[in-house]
Image 1 (cartoon, one colour):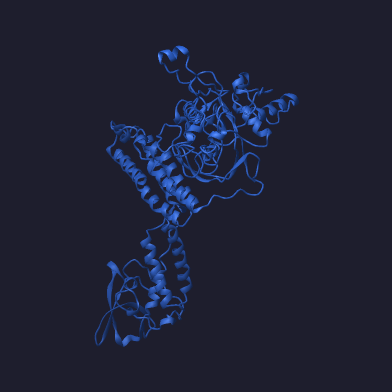
Image 2 (cartoon, one colour; image 1 turned 180 degrees about the vertical axis):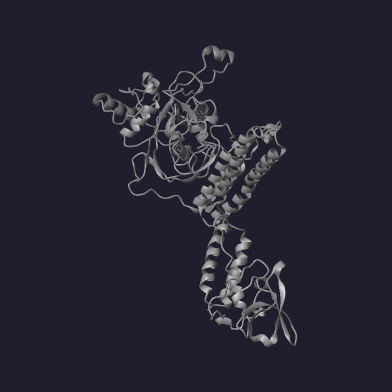
Amino acid sequence: MTRYMRQVTLAAVVGAGLVCAAHAGLGRSDLSGAALKLLPEKDMIRVTTTTGKVMEGTFDRETEKVLVLRMGTGRIGYAKPIDKTTIASRDVLPLDDFFIEALLPFELNNSTSFELAFYDEKIALFDEFVALCRLHAKVSTIRERREAFKEERKKVAVGMEKIEGEWYAPIAAAVKNFDRISNLMARLVKRFPGVGSDGFRGPVKAQKQYDAWSDERRAIARGLPKIVTERIPLAIKTRNYDEAAEEVTAFLNFYIFRVVEAEEGSRVSLRGGNVAQQMDFGYITRLERQIVEAYAKDTPAPKPPAGANEPNMVFVPGGYFLMGDEASKPGSDTFPMRIIKLDPYLIDKHEVTNKAYREFVDYAKSTGDSSMEHPDAPPLKDHTPAGWSQASFAGDDQPVVGVDWFDAYAYAKWKGKRLPTEAEWEMAARSRDGRVWPWDKDPVAPTFVNTPKGRILLAEEIDLENPKPRRKQTMMEKVKGIEPPPPPKTRLPTKTWPADSPIPPQADMDDFADMITPTSPYGLMHLPGNAAEWVNDYYSPRAYYDAPLRNPAGPEDGRDHVFRGGNFTSLKQDELQTFVRAKGVGRPKSRSRLPYVGFRCAKSLP
């Protein structure tokens, strides 16, 4: 069989019974315009001569004595006149044979994918053949090919891309292409040092190529937000929150670890300043917030499982929340704000008290047991807290203060618990609603937070609830008509309050029972203020840069550890914000040399 013009190659027709049994005598009027474009414009004729020679070609013209067929295609096509007296038979070849041979070359590419229109066009042609020629000998081949095209189309429709034979989600594909171009640029720089700078004096062609790749890479970075903006709402609509969170996390990582690093030091950044500082990472935060808000609305907080009723511990349902400061910029230790997913857990309602901690110290001293010690703790660790050296911090019901991280770690392990991770502490402080202050927008709650400002507010309330009478006038005051001075205002001392009480001993609970409001979303007492609290994580100013999506536990090592929540000496209210981080080593003291860091424990659920 000859080859005809266009993109399709006609292979030899095998077998004598290749007929379109479902539609005998398939005609051109039965086919779509797209199918007709694949076929010869004129009928194909097979001529068998009296000598047994077979010739095939398109009908050209016919006279009384001669049949003219057009043989071959393209530049070597020619007209072939055949003497009618030599023709033993002539047949019009069935169109279904040409249709199938036109479809067979349409195959998927093992290395790359195509535009959706490509798949739609080919699938429509496959469907048309299957519908018209259901009993054709090769219909099963076309069915298989149709299914393969449909499956690949599904992947492309959701933004996946085939690169070098492997399928990648949109962001992963962008990273792959971004890295591929970066590698090409790095090779060019190695060959032509300085090719990316304005002062380059090497081949112009090399710098043009470098600039072209740079533009291509930047186009990937600029085009990705549109893809993500389309995908995130779709994932939310279908309640696929895990996929949405993974996508937006990969999106954030792409910009931090690919785009910013690639742009820094480039001619663009040298001319325009710090690239990261000019980028709107708030765009990503807004996407994260959409996911968390939809998740919180659609996913009721789970109830505590059986066996989760630990005394004086609170169940935190976990799930998705936003960690970090939305307003932070690159360089801040709360940048970037991240969407995080935590497993449910338990956390102490109160800070660990001196009474409870004293039991631990007595045990350690009397037994010499070191099984609860951290591997890095000093041998024969003395767990006596600095707060016990001052009577104002040593009360049984006050939180233990003046402990170091190793003390807190050992106590928690001794109790069969652990320190909360930084993410768990922040989740307990801000909940799913992403509050900036643990008490959210309650204007009364700060009155019951043990800080210098909170003590002033509460002292004013104490004086209002229990106004002190003026003392009696002296005789001289009566003579001179002078009123005695007002009684002194209440002043609350700079010290910790009882761990299990929202107010200090100087305040009467009967006076404030109706006024006390929670200072944290899950009812944890003194989460803000009172004692600062060690968490499990080592401190790193870039800890959030590469934090995992699920259950982050901070850097693997470091010098300082993180503590959270502000404390009774915090002059700045901002120190009480849910995302504020503090770091320390040893047993930190305030500027006035007061110990202020304690802790509370957490526990994983089975």
